[in-house]
Amino acid sequence: MPKSNTISVSSMKQQLALFKNKRIRLAFFIPVLGVGSVFIVYTYITPLLENVMGIPQQWISTVLLAYGAFTILSNWLGAKVAQGNSRVKLKVIFTIQAMIMMALALTLSLPWMALVSLMLVACFSFALSTAVQLYLIDLADESSPGSKDFASTLMPVASNLGIAVGSLLGSLVVDNVGLEHLPWSAVLFAIGAFAVTSRCHQLDQQHLDITPLTSAKAS
View (cartoon, rainbow, N blue to C red):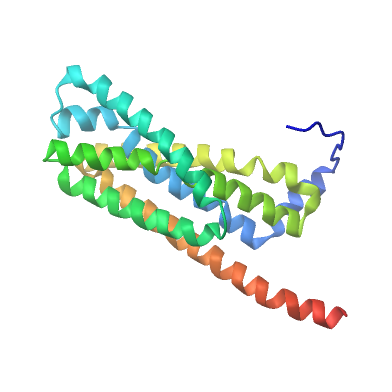
């Protein structure tokens, strides 16, 4: 990376001004719901494998290693999603994620098919990260340039919140209705992420329609 001597200095007021932007407040919940959907299942992956899918204990480590390997593909996929109109691609990602979680829910009694679904969950687990990070920074640059550094922290904060919320919801599902219902809860979170992304896309389009009119009046 080239060395940069430019230092951005802004006040706390300028940083927090970021939250005046409705689009940023809404976009913050894309990773909360998207990451939460994955961690509803991932937090309880070992009990799911052993107690629901019936995978022998000696194979659990191998399955977890394979899951980790497939998450590498999700990072590559995330780079592809971030190119071009990422909101449109994110909507596709969350649609696929919901379908995969549904397939997992329906195949838990069929170990090999459930394992395929689980590996597909891994493939899409981090596909949203790069696109949402860049989106948040772009929104900050557009509405509050002094808060770009602060905007860059929103993605990890939202992801960690998603992990916490997903794990909490997973514990409630396990305690009240059972492990086998975890994927259905993940489906709901993926649908929620799709809905929020769709609304963000809609607001982006409205903003693009308004901006030329504003520029024309100013000139």
